[in-house]
Length: 187
Image 1 (cartoon, helix red, strand yellow):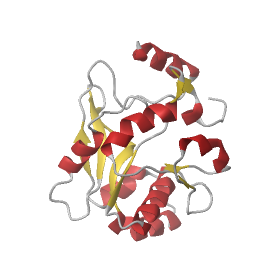
Image 2 (cartoon, rainbow, N blue to C red):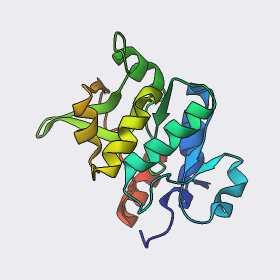
Image 3 (spheres, one colour):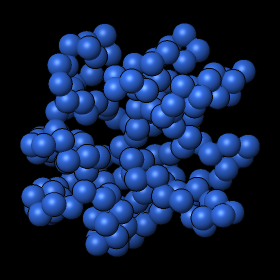
Image 4 (cartoon, rainbow, N blue to C red):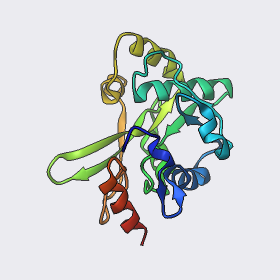
């Protein structure tokens, strides 16, 4: 999409991030945004901006770690992550992630959807993450782990399966064609 912040792209007169925030706010006690670079571009969101706490931009797990560090400073036990380019994720994301985590010592759950060709598809940027595993995650990143599912599988991560009703609710905007499709989905 030209290398800019996908979350700042317009969809139906609002940014993708505005759509994500509108879906997230009713489900959580607080919001923060993981973003690297100049944080001023998000000033109008009035959210804490959390840069990666690991050098070299090692991917989504670094964003998870930044969120876990932020949550730990506030005494929280877990966080939920959502992608800024996925405006139609379920309005019951958090309750269903929590339900799937019942009985887990360290609740670690990724969202998933069924796919007739590929089986269950995990959406690794949508998950419930325990603050108690943040030191392990920091060490894993230091050891070169970059794949989310590699790390979650190591810790017995579960899946919360969400239905696909006409379209995958975790559809994300990666191309101009995806943005046009998202516009059509609004109507």
